[in-house]
Image (cartoon, rainbow over all chains, first blue to last red; front, side, top):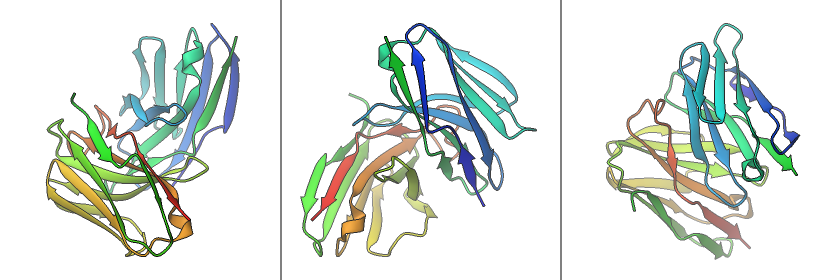
Amino acid sequence: GQSLEQPSEVTAVEGAIVQINCTYQTSGFYGLSWYQQHDGGAPTFLSYNALDGLEETGRFSSFLSRSDSYGYLLLQELQMKDSASYFCAVRDSSYKLIFGSGTRLLVRP
Amino acid sequence: DTAVSQTPKYLVTQMGNDKSIKCEQNLGHDTMYWYKQDSKKFLKIMFSYNNKELIINETVPNRFSPKSPDKAHLNLHINSLELGDSAVYFCASSQDISGGLYGYTFGSGTRLTVV
């Protein structure tokens, strides 16, 4: 079957660094994406990794290891506005974007 | 504004009714989607259209019927609404069927409550 595993909740302090892990098992793999969703809002696209390694976009970085079926989202210099849910997602061989169950990040002052 | 817009934002209706949700994107994207987000925030694909052609049709009750009159519009019609249909429905679009490099752009969602 297809599944993505990520922690349900993570808490961190403002200014700190936090890593949200994601492991996946899908039929076919065409890249790992990350989305952010604030309460009551829409998911917004953060990053995409098709190849192994680290991709950096400002305070956010995303990593992929295809051999380990594993990736993570790294958030640096945390701000209160980063409190949100973060979803990893994998596109499978049938063009479906399958989402993980989401990690709720709470940033404390 | 360039965006994915869906209407209505809120929909409260009685069991057994028929309702529609409309979605439009002005991003020039080829591919559009309907996702359902349940109370536990789990996002599940329902349908996808690429240039008006249905390419993904997940196992959803046949009371749900999508329709894409052109590649900028994707509507969702739901017949005989049930309590379990209560959820947030998101429309999304992507540049092409791969949807990878630039991701999906989501609409603001329609919160459907069936009473």
